[in-house]
Length: 167
Image 1 (cartoon, rainbow, N blue to C red):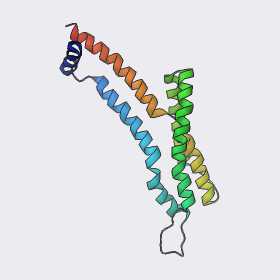
Image 2: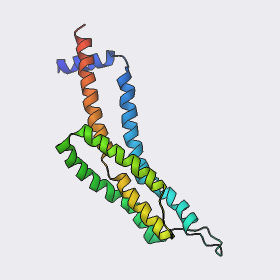
Image 3: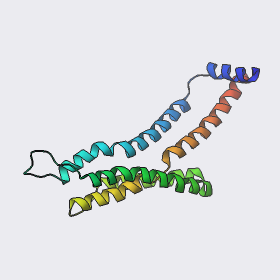
Image 4: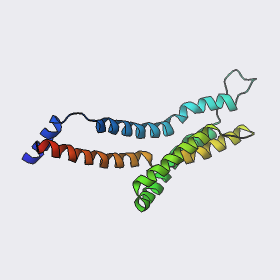
């Protein structure tokens, strides 16, 4: 118990350093990417309905059909589950840092591709959007960020505690 109080006192006495801000930015990026991936599509689906399912004879703006809304919104949760399982296994096999870089490259590539969805018909555009959106979210970026961040903080925390205690 006395040892724990010594560690807590050393942490309280420590100054804010650059790695604290790095940790905040890394954690914020992981949260933002998953939040963007899973929750922004509900706002964007209204715009997609007005663009691709617009009827000039109707007084209401265009809306996505309910089955397409379900697919566009549901693909995000399927991709997350599949990506967590696959990249968790791959991270154990290849190493977390290498898999982190791979998922980051996948995410950048397919986020650009989902913005450039193509097709001759509105249903074709929605199909390519769902395809690219699946691969965009098929990652475990946030989980890997927290694991790497935890190791990063542990290493710096141990060094900081050693310098504070050894003074």
